[in-house]
Length: 137
Image 1 (cartoon, one colour):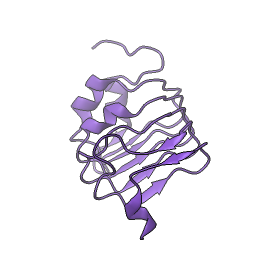
Image 2 (tube, helix red, strand yellow):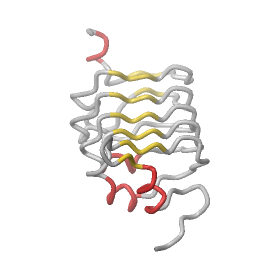
Image 3 (spheres, helix red, strand yellow):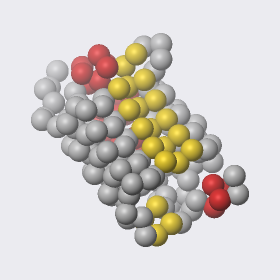
Image 4 (cartoon, helix red, strand yellow):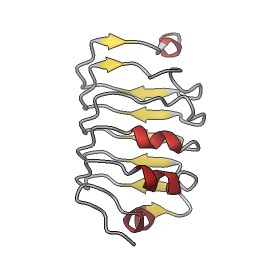
């Protein structure tokens, strides 16, 4: 198996971090800078909850292939924009607090219909779009 580059999570490391019954990938505080597209295509059916807090991630776009995910917890990173999460029909919790978001909008088709909790405090948000469903809650 190919070794992961510094700042990446290898498939072997990810497999070791996943609680088999819980389907949780806990990759907090691992100094991650990038999420490998290939890794997430392999893990997409095995993971329900992903914990990526306290890393150095600039993007969480590869997670859009994890269509069965229910929770993405990614506070204290360097995420600057939200990808198109519309295909994540089971996503209920998105925690992106304390990142570098300047705009709170979901690319293309908007927020996933199942999303009930969006935590985006401690960002420098100046523009909000596609969060109408949260205003009426």
